[in-house]
Length: 295
Image (cartoon, rainbow, N blue to C red):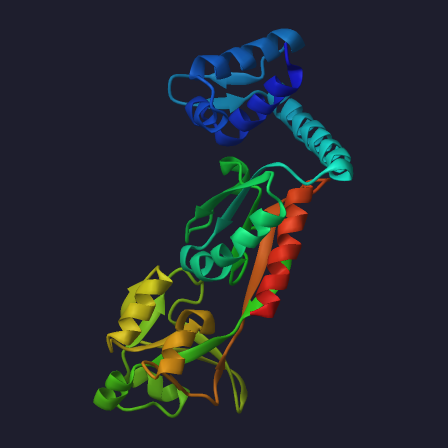
């Protein structure tokens, strides 16, 4: 019996709550996953999981054993990584989660150089604008833009995302250009719904910090669609510079209300709290932090 392998299978079953999902993730059959759990229970002579037709749950002993498994497996992984790094480059799979548009524009272009530097390392990139449960999904780390909501994760700030208030010349010709934040109340505004602030926009202005609640003519959960809506003359939006920079340079979009600076969005790398951080995670965080700083 390969105890460490069975422990790894048990850990993922405990985290996902699903035998089939673990089977797909580890490229095993579902019966094989079940056999690992059964063999582990027989070896330990305890019941780890309560099974039913609809769900599974850890027994009290199973919960205690899960905590020990996490500790042991992370420590083994770190020891292997440390020894391996003394001899060669990091190997294995690095699973990274990023927001879709931010990832396309700011992360993906830098991946090829990273992979060339570490040819034995494979990247599994999961692009999703909604927050992914890193532990449940077996993700090593995530890049997140904006306020953090999950206090159980370790977060390292790796950059800032400056923002601007923009509109198309066609929109401004039709509706006029606002000169103050209060003028925004009379305009059509485009709102990004995945930010916790939504239609409450925050600025640093001549009077200090100011907040305005705008009227949303169009709301969407995708930054590229905000870009398209602005270019189509559908209203005013507060967007990251990286989303509209080329349009601003070409004159397709105009920066307005330049006396009022939208609050910066922090960019963080986050990963599950553990005693040892895998070398591949540390390497990528340091690498992408440098790249974002150079942009």
